[in-house]
Length: 473
Image (cartoon, rainbow, N blue to C red):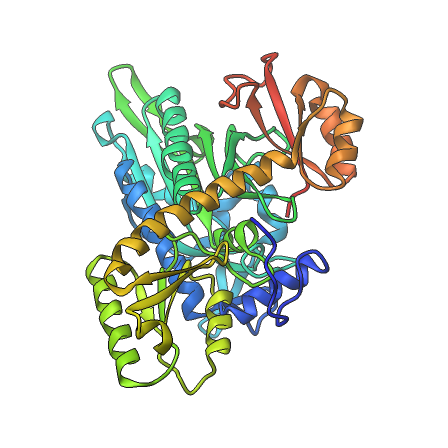
């Protein structure tokens, strides 16, 4: 994506990337910091993007067979202590309620950090025989993890997410379903809707979810060349089912179920900002943008406003998410800058001069290219432009990642490269657990393991297993 001349109201990525990120969130009216440290207020435009994310992911989750439900926000503290590794992994982040209704509670209640424990308590009630399997449940909810270094959307004390939880008759069924979610829900959405090319791979034992036998991840590269974990899918084995007695009657007697859990969160909003944004603000892929096209009448005369209104109606009839900005009391330049900040993919400017010749001007957000077109051609041009922008953004993100990913045979060389930004790949046998400890001392991590051809590794011991190393948020 070429550099754009910035309007001067947000920081430059090159000069101060963290400040640029905060500026975009504020100026594009996505979110504000909440009154309690680490919390956030998601503003209407930011929430509209989240609703688009929800809609696309929810549709894919349901296509994978899962049904939505809801479980309580408060979890008995004793539930978490049933699984040692799970509670140890979350212990520093827990918020615990000890007082309520004017008195000390008989048992403290943990504010939901994740729901494996409470959902298993009910799975144990609902599952009696193999006929009850597979049980595929998802919930859209908020969770609380007390964050020491908060950053809006990326790490907050309270955030929104979906968490899926499933129970299966065999380990293989659970394994296949965990990968189905990873590939057909998360990776498909991230690549084909968000236009973010992700690396799907296996987490190392050091990086996997507390209490999981195996964790799978989708890792994206942001514009500052850092890695962002965008979604995970976990194989939980029988660990939780044994703790909660979640089992079914089979021909061979009682069998504990095999389980998965998986989730993505409002962190995807942070990914969207950092994967595509530039020095003019947000840059949204058309399939995800709440407003795909903004129609701007340059002046307030009747013909201009009437034509702009007719174009808006035609776009809506064609199924495009379009909006008109008729605030002619505000300068044309200010309006344009505002919509650029919000990342709207296409802008149609209806001006008196072009209109005398039956034309309007269409401008793309990603490249800033302008094109004068006849009014009757608007609907067709918009459709073609939106398809082209979606493809161009994905192609651009792929090229960026490729340019900033290099293969190494030496761990020291890989560390030196990643310390400057980007991804390094090298054989996992050249890293191993000891090398992973060395990487961690440098503030880096093995983001995931992949097979040499880029597919998911069957076993990490295989000779063709490659480690992807990066610096993560």
